[in-house]
Amino acid sequence: MPQQAATAVEIVDVAPRDGLQADAVTVPTATKAQLIERLVDAGVRRLEATSFVHPKRVPQMADAEDLMAALPRHENVTYIGLVMNRRGLDRAIDAGVDEINAVVVCSDTFCERNQGTTTAGALAVWEDLAQGAREAGIGAGVTLSAVFGCPYEGPIPVERVASVAAEVAKSGPVEIAIADTIGVAVPPDVTERVGAVREIVGPDVRLRAHFHNTRNTGFANVVAALEAGVEVFDSSLGGIGGCPFAPAATGNIATEDLVYLLDRMGVETGVSLESLCESALWLEELLGRPVPGYLSKAGGFPRGRD
Ligand code: ZN
Image 1 (cartoon, rainbow, N blue to C red):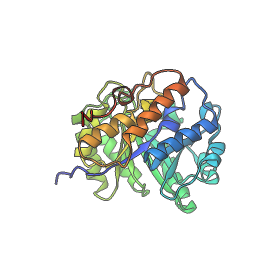
Image 2: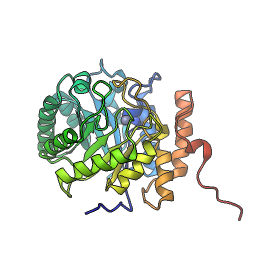
Image 3: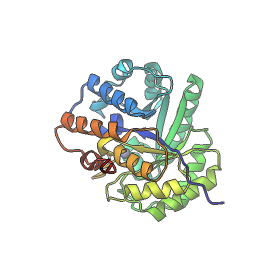
Image 4: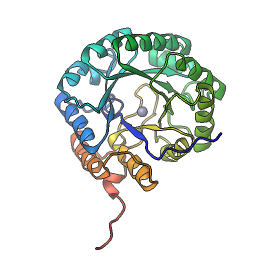
């Protein structure tokens, strides 16, 4: 049965973590909190706020605890913390995150470089993290990374992606995110891989997509994912960030560009394009350079004359 495209989707803004983690500009904790508040004010209800990884590995995220303490809490806003191991989970729980996100890379070589273990090793870590999160009463989601290609191994067989998805589903994730970590996918790949994951995990697991616009195909991929039944999309304000451990893999899709696309397609997001554009310009000031997103430059659909 073909999946029905959603008429409303959720956006997870990843700018505070994925966006800033490798930036040359060190952003003070209070300014990160301001960024998050701006996104919440624009209507974003889920954010990847920070990560609980070793501060030597990702110095930009060394203030994870301080940031969580500085954030205003809202009943309907979920702050997600990225964790890689049990130590990170304990820190995230103590810091009061609402949800954790773990990563399982679909290729062994990339997984080794990113997490120091194979895909099988990362699956075991995920299982442990999911259990720990459950015991702490918080949600746990998982991102399948390098779903469409690996910088070291090249193509990743769709069967491998499906079998990794089947494994992660056993621990009851709040959702499974499918990430094009190096930005190589085109729409037919998305249709195929989302379909394969859906088939193996069944209809009840929510699917999320994380696209990079590295080769300018990110937004075409969003449309394909939407049509394949994906209900949650990651994006970052201004399109900042990417993965620092993947060579030349820059370019999260920009939240403001995503909201324009979805608005014009009649898909509800609950997020204000105008607010996002103002914040993207604020972000340019902060980083001292233009952001990759288009909408803060072009503006929304012209209103015309009254
Ligand atoms: Zn990303």
